[in-house]
Structures are given as C-alpha cells and as structure tokens.
Length: 83
Image: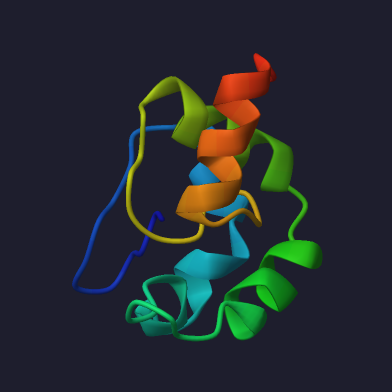
C-alpha cells in the first residue's frame, strides 16, 4: 500500500492515485481472522486496483489487502497462473 503519511511510499506512478494512500492503513492489515470488508470496500472504488493487484502478485506481497485481494486470494490466483 502506498501510504503517504508516516508509512510506505512507493516509486510506482499508479500509487499517487491509490485510495489507500488517503486513509488509515490499519484496515489493510487485519489481524488473523479479522475482517477484510473495509479494505476491500475501499479497493472496490479505487481506479488503480488492477495495477495494485499486479504489483502485489509480481512482488510476492505476503501480507495485507492489495488490489482488493487477501493473501489467500492472491495465493490462489498465483496457483492458477493469473497475474
């Protein structure tokens, strides 16, 4: 996630348009068994969700919600060969 204030900042150009950079990053990293609903809701309205998911798959991001997908969902996509 490309958080601008006090967190991760990515050199990827698409991150400037990412909605997650404008909100608290906490929902994107729920505790094990915690809800992903809030983060996925933000991702659903984001215009760069596809770029975010592609980045996460390409860089093997193992934690958090990226591109509207959880770690488990991204692993399933990788197993299917989708990227």
